[in-house]
Image (cartoon, rainbow, N blue to C red; front, top):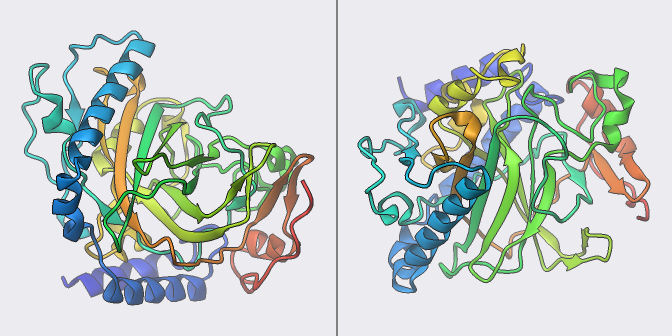
Length: 372
């Protein structure tokens, strides 16, 4: 079966619930825009590989990641001699190159074998950022906020696709659902308990912002995401360039240069779903091979690499990904909510979009953000 046929079938199968609040028209427009982008832009950082290696980036990154795993194991009282358990496979139908032959990892293997290089990708652009982006999230590394689940430290590196240099001082905003498929900060019929849980508007769990350091790297302490109807397990990523850090630990100004999503190997997702509270998630599972956004990524490779910190997945995960972006690009996503010092304030232009299953037109703009 040709890739275009796979994509078309997935699109038809999921158009009614592809992303909570997305209509069939939204979905078709999103996939078309992604195809056009991938046709006209570099799909990987292969052209940067030698440049990054020459400047010592690979060595620096494998030392960094190895040290972070040691620190995380020490923090959780996990023996340092535990073997590295690495991502194994991904479906061939996704047109990726995720297979690893590292099946015999032992405690004696040099960490550079595990962590060397950057399996880098360019995250596919989102013409719809999903209806659950919140503007004004806090700058912080730990975004768990008391949520329970599998601990995960996520290490992201930004590379300039034009210069092949790491991008420092870029603010990375991530958000994802909890272990049972519910997003914090949004009250919508398609999200968790919907209108029955108005307090969720002020919930900030599993959302946060971090600046990239001199090596273009930012780290988040979070949890393995769960799943919800119509989408494979994923994390949303947004980058903001030339922004200013405010005294209240938020950022303002600058411009949004990228909106994308990152994914996890199916084996890891399946394993996570065997433990609580993930096992109690009653929402239907969408496999990576059936996710219309992921299928639309073509030969981009937006999957994290990872190691498990111990013998059991509940001991935690260390995941990493380097991805390319154009800092001069400008994206204009619409927030569902603004987070202010008084709590969450819903964007009135987004209310119908969030609650009617996509029947209303997507909001075309937003009123001025309330003062913090």
